[in-house]
Length: 157
Image (cartoon, helix red, strand yellow):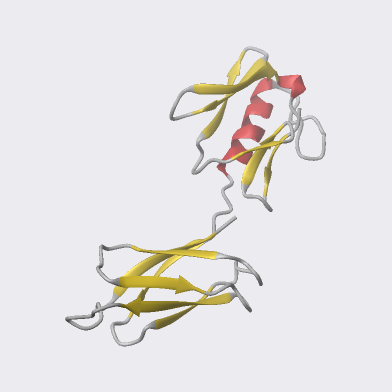
């Protein structure tokens, strides 16, 4: 069975099925000649098979010993490919331009404030030339704009 990290989908693929996870949630463990793949937080096992059954993304054996296979699998599970960042509005402008070389034309961005605000809403544009713009709309700004308002952004898969 093939097990590998798919950079295009930002997922681990196990035997043609994508498994969505974050931050090393999957882990491979050696049990004699067998390898178990489990979800670390829930201790739920996804796969339990002989080490010789595991292949990389090209269909080549993932290793010649159980430990080599576990090391390969855990290396794939640690890849996350998540593209994200944090910036802020300066309190004067309602627009921020974010540039990041990891972004490509047409990427979709999700934006969320990192502090609680009332009556402020964010609208990011689609990525063009490794950058996107976040527009802020303020409704009933009684005390003006929030100064240095931080927000996080993430590329959606």
